[in-house]
Length: 259
Image (cartoon, rainbow, N blue to C red):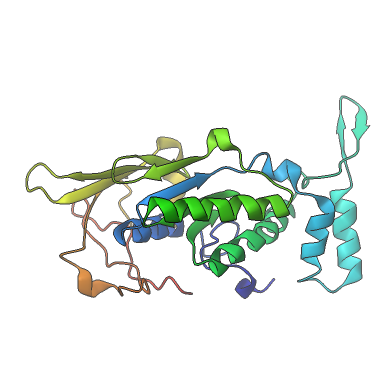
């Protein structure tokens, strides 16, 4: 599978991508004043992917009919529960090694639709965030998302989805808590915190070799006035590393977003 098929902000189930890059993209958006965030949840994603729609998308990338037939049989294999066989009309096999790549290809349609509309986002499997500078923009982005998911036979779980104004609201994503902008007491400078929830520390540390493994709670200072020269105003680069409270580097790397 050629990597160029996937969007650069799709970070799940791909080599050399992962939680570290997700956090970098989130921080980049926050630092570039995209403080309105749409935290979206897809209702029963892996259980509700329509088989025929999925196969239609796979034909864009797979020309071998034998491979397509094999995938179709895999999808239709069904499952046993309490000694009884159950057929399935939607969803990918739970625990199946092929499920992550099928899911990624399916939501790839959403990624490129968001790109078409100039909407910033980050996605890890079926978990994703949208970013915008204004409330109006984030509402439009949310509408594009709902319409695109409907075309894919999916729906937003509104009870688990929320809009965030990061100037006053915190949010969680992939086991990380992002605490909103506030003035630092000692000098009045704008800061925000990123904290790693305990059960995700080990995974993040594995992906962030050499980072702040002793203390995952890092205070991020706004670099608008101090590090403007370190990254492009067009968002071509991540900011350079800043210092944590223990003097170690935070996760900014200066690596290009547009891989």
